[in-house]
Image (tube, rainbow, N blue to C red; front, top):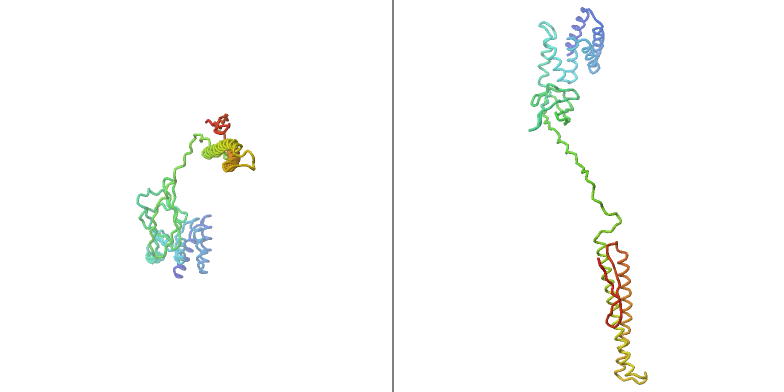
Length: 321
């Protein structure tokens, strides 16, 4: 390798000295000399950018040759191989760089990492492929693409705008296949109906079932109260009837027959029952009215009508929806 670099330097210097320089060529030659200084210092990482800039300003076989040698030394086998292949047709028989170029191509060939791009079954045709942000117009599915060893970012773009990205790592001399598949299409947008929404009841409004249940409970409690009042009237009437019989059997508290004693006990029981039933009836009737009046409004009418009940007068509660 040092012999090849020295030979490359001599050839390039001879060509540059014999030619009549122009402005871009002068700048390219200066960059080339700086690159050679880096090569002599065994600093190819700093020489490569100088050689590439020189080659961009003024293409030269000597610059391309030294650039390819440095790239091979740094392990950039695919880049070096491509530059040697570009240089080979430019060299004529007798050029001392020709056998070295052929030797380098033969040595680099088995070391090339190769990337194979494959398409999933049924995938549409690719519109563009990028490797490390550089377009690959020559990349076709199934073909082997020489790349430098290491990590590479692969981007596939499809005609419908979808994009697939993949990170690929390839070792020296390896063959790596990458299967590309477009991502699933985005779901269609949800269509929002323009029809107005049906009105909803206010948050604080109780559900219809709760209103109906509360009214039913009001009628049940009120009915129990009315029934209790009716029982109070009946037992009260029976107690009054027992009082008349008691006056006959017991005209004097000190003179009372056995039948009178029984009537007195019965009268006391009926009076107590009448009082208790009356209290229960009033409470039940009042609770029923409270439940009915505090229930949500419905088309309900409540009326009280006088009625004759067994044992005395009373009132009936009537409701109509």
